[in-house]
Amino acid sequence: MTGAQIPPADSGGLIHRLDRSAFTSKHALIYLVLLVGHFFDGYLINVTGVVIPGASKAFHIGSGEAGWFSTALFAGMLGGAAIAGIASDRLGRKYPLAVSIFIFAAFSLVAVFAGDYPMLLTARVCQGIGLGAEIAIVLPYIAEFAPARHRGPMVALATAAWLVGLPVAAGIATWVVPAMTWRGMFIIGTVPVLAGAAVIAAVPESVRYLLSRGRVTAAARIVDGLAAAPDPATAPVPTAAEPAMATGPVGARTAGAFWELLRPSYLPYTLAIWVMALCAGAFLYGLGSWLPTVLEKEGTSLLHSFTYTAIISAVGVAGSIVASQAINRLGRRWVLAPAFAISGVFCLLWGTVSGTVAIVVLGSLATFFGSGIAGSTLFAYSAELYPTTIRATGLGWNAAWQKAGGLIIPTIIGYILAMHTSKYAFFVLFAAISFAAGIAGLVTVETRGKTVEQITALLAGRRRPRHEAATGTSTATISEG
Image (tube, rainbow, N blue to C red; front, side, top):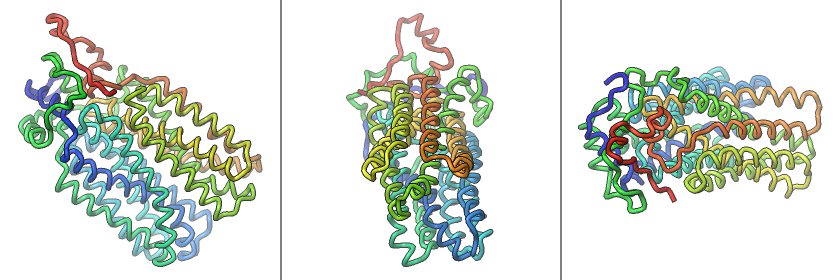
């Protein structure tokens, strides 16, 4: 199948059954397997802060060399996210996802036995490739297999599972590091090999990917085993017009093609996503990396600064949970832009206070709206905007720009702090980042209540297919109330 061809007519019926299915125990099992792998992705990213002190002593390295430990991870993640998205659009979701999990689990084992710092650094780069790849693949998969009414909430909650990795890593470190040294954190990091095996055993290939390749029979077998009776909360069974929407304008020959993200119909939305992702990454990773240092310089003890940072970061999980409901009630666009802007306002207020309670409360509110609500909504929106043949590519580049933000911001903050400016400059920077993301958030297309095929058709300018206009039928949308 090439060009603008569409799958056989049966594919439309399969998509309808998949989108309008009730949420079943089979959906729950698949989702749980995916969440376990995604949680460990977040955990392994966030072990950096608790591993560096012990590794620095073990290998007798200074702060400059230690700084490369975080940089190496983000460099690997950036490359892994960009490449895996393209690979997944060409090879499928299931096996690339399993491989990405095996990669970051295997290099956790390499890190456990690292005999010197270069070996540990190499393991961290390779681990980053797997971590970035997993993010690029798992969220598009969730968007493709979930019943349409649950799609946005399920992607947002998956982001919450990922964010949980930060406080969990900090909490586990309090007893693992004293008992097993820093290597113990990587021993735990080998556990996701079981999640990778579970993906192979329990997770089917994406139905939408199979249909994009014309493999209708294989897709039908999966739908027969997964879909249940229509969810009574969804709209009535759609008309015959919608099967033509079962695939987008991008054919199999362009699957995973980067330039398709820059087609005129997608260009403004793609650029807006990249700006938001860059800012979101700078916000999330910049605060996590430098907030303890800024608080310590202002007189907070190091231990308390770690505790405050953990609390403030953990509140982002609550924001993700709120986002999972808000995006279906308010829409993606009217959650994204306001949440980023509100986070910016709280950053400005945050920089003016000094009391412990005020620091924690305002910091928590900034991350609640910034990393939690806005960050989760951004991933949900990115996972559903593009056609199946470039969906993982689009999400992968979103994740790559987020990691680029994580690479760039530490250097910028380092220069700002080296200039001996007041702490307020630190918070003004994060406010500016949030406001820039909020402005970009206005350049979005509303996707609430639409199937991913309807979103594709909307952006392709196919609001009403020719035969629909002739017959007077209309395309059904999904109720997400």
